[in-house]
Image (spheres, helix red, strand yellow):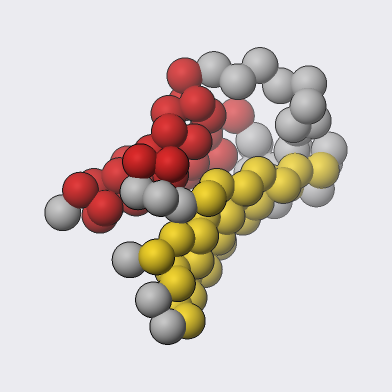
Length: 92
């Protein structure tokens, strides 16, 4: 139950951030399972951001902490004016 709750809240925050900050018109969520490895990837077509320059507020830090709490890895990929992709990988 803890795993599902952390994962749900992590991606709830990611979706909220995309809708609130990215000015995106599309969101795509891909889920794949290979063996016991779960991968979730959320992509938007928004304005993107420079990861090294963004102030990591509570939202991004909470997402990272939730991924770590369930022994997962969270990766952020973003390009200016090309959108953002958030990838979670972990065993379930």
